[in-house]
Each structure stands twice: as structure tokens, then as C-alpha cells.
Length: 140
Image (tube, rainbow, N blue to C red; front, top):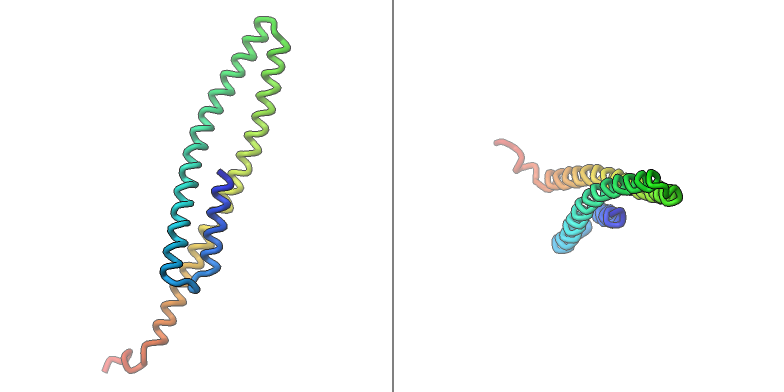
């Protein structure tokens, strides 16, 4: 998921850097790629939610198996299961941190996009105002 988010961030930043320098066709092409990447990010976020539900269920099952192994006298098996659960949980936590970091960067990029688009629109508006001859602005 993080790679999809970072790709989207890169696309949006490139677009913002070239704002006002692209032809309408180039701008449309870039927007199609951005929209496609946003859909990919959404799809991966949905996958991540399903994975997290499956993960929580799996951890509970493994903990139950470890408890059953301990009760039945298989202490080594119980210890091994619990150790593997802890290792897997630390890896999942690391992946979650990376995902949260990517989400934070995406949110920052969205804020930057809104600011740049607002500035660009204001710039276009001020250019349009300058192009209108003063004679047309008077109310004679």
C-alpha cells in the first residue's frame, strides 16, 4: 500500500510543479494517471482493512492454540507459537507505521495541492483582469 501512496504523492507533486506549463491535453493525461492511481490507493486501503481483520482473527486463533498446547503439556510448542506471534506482530506494527507515515505525507500533499490550485486560479484571474481594457470596465 505504501508504494501506491508514494507513487500518488510523486504524481501529484510533479503535476503541481508543472501547473500552468502544460497543454490541456497533457493536463488531462496527467489527471487520468492521477485518478487511476487514486483508485489503486483506495483499492489497496480496502485490502489493508480486510487484511487487518484477518490478522486479528489469526492472532486470536494462534493464542488459543498456544494456550491449548500449554494445557496439554506441549510447553515448547506453546512457547514457539507465542514467540512467532510476537515476531509477526512487531513486523505488522512496523508496516502499520510505514502506512501511517505514507498517509500523513499524502494528506500534506493534498493540502499543498489545494493551496497551489488556489494560487494558480488567483493568478489566472488576475491575468484576466489585466487583459481587459479599462474602457470596458467603465460604466458610462
